[in-house]
Image 1 (tube, rainbow, N blue to C red):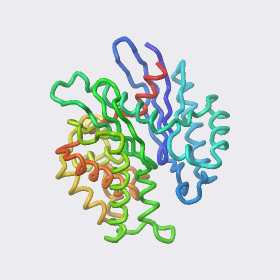
Image 2 (tube, rainbow, N blue to C red):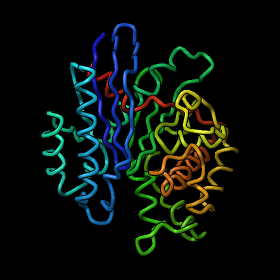
Image 3 (tube, helix red, strand yellow):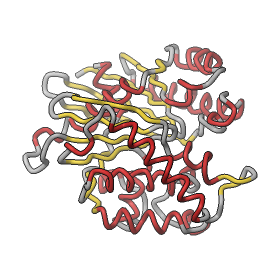
Length: 313
């Protein structure tokens, strides 16, 4: 076994996985898996820069993670940063801060690399499942971007497009600095059109409709699953490898888009940091399902973070 640590810093959240990996058998044993909402991408779509308060929230999480990594004695660490830090003018501040705290430079990876890690993390366990038809379409709906990967044992095609739950919320659902409560029909229509244009872009290089199994990753998808199951609290075990039908995703998305902040916040499985962005994330998922004719989505708690851990091992 090799003890590794992986950090995935996205637009909305930063996550840590410390795990023991056995490369020969493909076994990965979690020792610590945690997530912190830091909203690193706050305002990036508008200003092109990482906000000082967003950087400080992220560095505070890094200091906490440094202690956890030290306690577990991980032999190797890889820190991967995605959409927000890839786009920002002042990304050097972010790189220096992470290096000072964790002793490694964040790797600002391309969308294609991001997709490769997501596919590995999401499908490594599924390959023994005879009842799941291939090829898989793995969809990772992040804060700033969504990754699409089609593959069987290996990636056949991948594309990252700039639609994520935070970016769509900030672009379409914010008026005078406040998220609409609830959004207007015109706002929803504009957001839907933006998502459809991004799907057109993805389809230029990724054969989305050839997929036989849709695998959905990240917080927007897992939260939709938690709502579908009416869980009394967020439960990773209940969510991992759950299946949500197209009809149920449509019902939940419609409710989220027409609910108030207070109504969404009252959902027991809802992370406070997702209350304002979950409606946009759910609409991205629904739009994908309708585009490819998927009857259900297989939800995975294992994603880019697990892919990063495997790359370290």
